[in-house]
Length: 631
Image 1: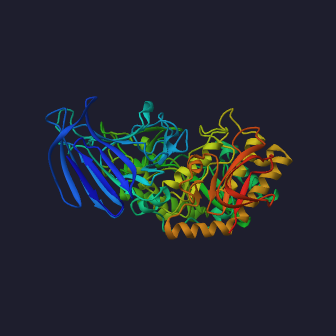
Image 2: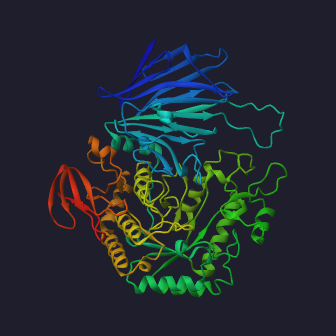
């Protein structure tokens, strides 16, 4: 038994085992192996068809499994861009899993941030369980997660939201599969241990988008993904952001802030925002300056404004139990609660244990906004750097005002920020592509590699771009300088060079501490970034118009170029600039691949015709290979 359904995007063939083959203009672009029921650690695969009905625009099939009482239901519908598939299982089934072959169509992209940010995504096995925004997950999952996968053949998968937990693996143990699991919705945390819970059964709905190539599939998926209708302030792109964290850490004082700003100005660096990081507060959750470290915050902000800086303050969503602000929030019911006694749930985070603001409570959100705005009115600060907000800080059994999967906390957070602040940034997201704010890459370590070092700045920017986040903020240049892992002068230079050709750049480690040569190179590239500001403005206009990313993979304008599809150490800024940063220590030459087109060496004016591999391109410390496309 076989069914064939056509849409304007392509066609799909479905057989009695649940396997599917998707075609686009005669090309096989995606193969699915159907679904598997799962309970108590055991898989129950499909054995046949119990019943089916179909029309030209939909098909409904009930499949039998190796467990007679368990049937799986598939509904497939035609959509303008391809198809919508819904797999569902009976009540009390623990999970349903769909499996997709990575071939044909490799390589694959998307899914969001990883600690080891490989590019393409399928260059290494992927495990994400649960799949949700996580602060430094042990399986490599990070803060901005997106249930969206895209292959080079032009097929894309995008999950619809549901109430069950998700899990994902890709090429685990070399199986050549993308496996997506949807678990049944959990019972309410207040349910008695022996009370029965009428779980609706797991459901997994996925949109299959079919197009001619990866960029076309991305564009076709944008109405489903969502995209921003507004952009962050121009200054955040035109000039670097400076932050106190990497150099001053938690010891930062008012004197340090003024001294830092003075050095930035007198050394001739461009600047937009000076962000005062942890810890300026009296206590976490208290929107009051520490009077000992910051005796006159209004005067400090006025002085920074007079020098041309905007000023922002770091803030998380945690409340220190020893601060009076915690007592106020707890008494009003604004913190998530423990099911055992209804008291505030003390959650472990990187600064100990604290209460967590309940963003599902409208009164809590309004109160928090009033606290932030009161601080702005009193001190004149322009905005806030919002930290944390990941799902792992919401315990599974926590009681919130509204009951929903904890991964949605990240999107509520970004929604709040985008609705009320312009000079701001976040580092988390779940289906948050429509927010017109800066999304910061996760805190980078001061190292070179793809293991959350310099190379991952590039691959993470590419990943976020193809996931629909155009306004990427790379983390601090040189990394966070944690413990004894600090950047040397070479790493500082190469990091600055890479970030200069990204939409935004952010300094924290002082580049002048490495001597005159490093200082001069970093300053030159900071000014190069400002020289590109008019072009960045045109790219922002383009992304607001049609969603085209600012940072583009090398294949974006030549989507069938096999070398470009797998290149992980070059990128395009818009269509004009090809950037080949140095991401290896000691390297003074590197190979550069030029896709089809005519390219001018930015530094030497020599002309090259692509596609071509240039070998041993000079890359002395003061020079990053950079090419400009010619009309």
